[in-house]
Length: 194
Image (cartoon, rainbow, N blue to C red; front, side, top):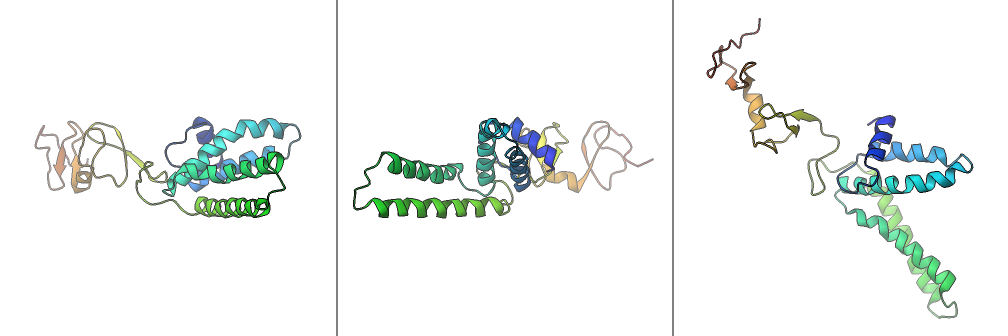
């Protein structure tokens, strides 16, 4: 995915947390959002505008790895606990320092794990979150529905897509013919190339 395709896809899926996203979709969009961090006053507005699409694309990226997007909440919840304990907590407790250290370790560990997961390539094939975003799309010769390369059957009509490789389709009636056929057995159209 290119830089502009990534930006278009992330804004098109502004708050879509379902499906999968490739590494290029995530990292090009992160680069795009980082550009606004260096512009004074714009960075404040941009941080609010880009928060939801950044979170959505990171969630879809974890889905590409086969992980739940809910993992993104763990470091954020830990940070909220950290801030709550600092500002509203009782600092005279004996366990205060140990608790804060534990929250800090959990936050850092999960954040590093999430970064590693996001950087690794996606799982091949389909998973419970959807089809691989790097697979190419083709059209079903029977019903013209969108199918993925590698699919055995069309998801709409159930046509055996693998049979396309075993023969050729008649240009008139779209009937599957054998590679040895000179004429379509259904309508009689010549299959010989002119």
